[in-house]
Image (cartoon, rainbow, N blue to C red; front, side, top):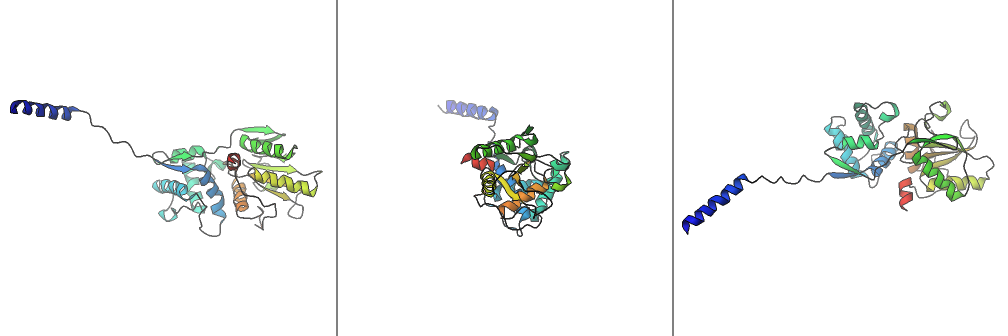
Length: 273
């Protein structure tokens, strides 16, 4: 019996020694909410302090830690606040990928975030502006068109676009329309109450929208609208979106918001109800 037991022990040891080791499962990567990141990237640089955008801290920290690991952001700015230092660091990362111009503005896009997160984090609530197209005779992207179509459905009327997006040939726009998500709309023939209704409806579906008047600048009456969280925004449009969240008018004087007050939502938040 002792011999048989010894043989069994020897066989068990042999099997154990030749059996392949089972690798421990890799730890799950953290998740970064892209909607929260983009919201913070619009709002935080316009704040007078280092306060954090609600719900964005953990996702922004993941981005900042990844930028720090690439020696693009000082550890002192890894704080969950997507301020000007983080914008500059992200722009440097975009340039390292070969991006130029508005593609390297420091406003994160889906592709660059995916690359930055490789081995570090995954993305949730991804955003994309979609492809460029023509609607109502103006250039815009498919996300902006969908927002405008929904506003028209709610209003029960067609809106006239006087200036679209990706328009770099209008110095009077100060760069606001250079990227995506920017629209100017005619108010010709509209009553004062209808103008307000249009602005309110645009805001309800995710635009930062204001009625512009001749007293404010060298322009005729019109409605100016910026699609919040459009990742093709120019820096100027990005600043207007941030100022809208902060209760400003989107003009250079950063005066109080003079438009109808509604809950501030993105297109994606509106669609989720």
